[in-house]
Amino acid sequence: MRPSESVPEILGSPTEKAILSWGVSKLGMTMDELKQDWEIVQVEAFNSEKKRSGVAVRRRGEQVVHIHWKGAAEMILAMCSDYYSQSGTVNVMTDEARSDFGTEDGLTLLGIVGIKDPCRPGVRRAVVSCRSAGVTIKMITGDNMHTARAIALECGIFNPEEDLEHEAIVEGVQFRNYLPEQRAAAIEKIRVMARSSPFDKLLMVQCLKQKGHVVAVTGDGTNDAPALKEADIGLSMGIQGTEVAKESSDIVILDDNFASVVTVLRWGRCVYNNIQKFIQFQLTVNVAALVINFVAAVSSGDVPLTAVQLLWVNLIMDTLGALALATEQPTNDLMLKPPVGRTEPLISGVMWRNLVSQALYQVIILLTLQFKGSSIFRVDKKVRDTIIFNCFVLCQVFNEFNARKLEEKNIFKGIHKNKLFLGIISMTIILQVVMVEFLKRFANTERLDWVQWGACIGLAALSWPIGWLVKCIPVSGKKFYAW
View (tube, rainbow, N blue to C red):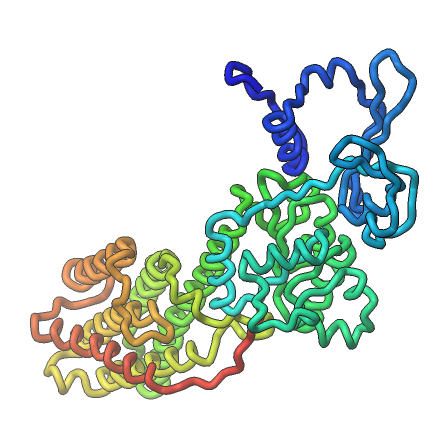
């Protein structure tokens, strides 16, 4: 090909593009001449069962039709009775030449092309990240055993030092013919399934779900649609994916990169974790307010928190608290924890531990102020109720920091990255000062002096060391190793 000639536009599947590009650049094939001299009579699309596709062509002006097949090497070899040698002569396809493949079908073998599709940069790292997060990756492919094994090794899906090859790599027909009990026993050890059909992929998804796993499936073809729809999470490819695959999936990966699955996983865990943080925080507020008003009403017939004050507490905790805790960005620590099983409760044992300890502390402090506050601070009832209201709100502000980390003791880790959280905390404190000091008639409060403000802040700040000590208490729980 001369340097002055432009490279023709090549359309088709990635395999076809690679072969045609090689033919143009290395063999001097001229595509324009081929298009002028030959016409396509019929095209048979790739069939996942037969593992081949075909085309019937005819030279313009002639009646003779030439049929060409391409596909899996063993499938094509089984159909050939002759082959072209390197010198261009036609030879009979003997059993030795065919390497014991199948029966003859009258075709002539033109050639076998080896194509390597290297893993995208970052795929191996993504596989490692998924494994460290407790996610097991299984590769299901229509390629033969040797190709599938090589790809799995390159990507890090198959590790010969950890996985027994005869158990970790199977063919679709072998998996399909297992008895249900054998399939259930083998499914955990399988890392690669080669020469698989769409039914085999669907069967694996169903088997994993029956064993309690949360299953995510990636795919791009029409044949992947049943498995994508059956899976708990279907991820289709946005570039190479067919419309049928996209419609059957829950998430479309726009860059067709497996590494994006790690991003999906990280953000999914982040959203789930943020929901748990807010639930823990909100329940603490509600439990404390309910117990305080109930005990006070039963014992003295008087409640320390008025309707307006409770409305204000719910406003800042529901709206501002949700914004503060729901905007936490995902961290790498999320990828080091085991996945949450489908049967695990939303409110975990860790959350109950944190919730009960903080609510109990707030109830003790505020009931003490309710019954002894007037004598301790030497103030009248209205000032005492203002101190209770102020202390209660500030307890929630300080506890909002505790809620950032459900298990970690360092509640300030990464806080500088969440500007919105810091802004909401600052806004809440400013609005609380305005409520207490300037909206006395509206909020039914009295102005507090510096000593009273200091006492409220000090009592609220004790929730930090209490939270730290409580997190030293271990919480036993069942571990789930599904997505």
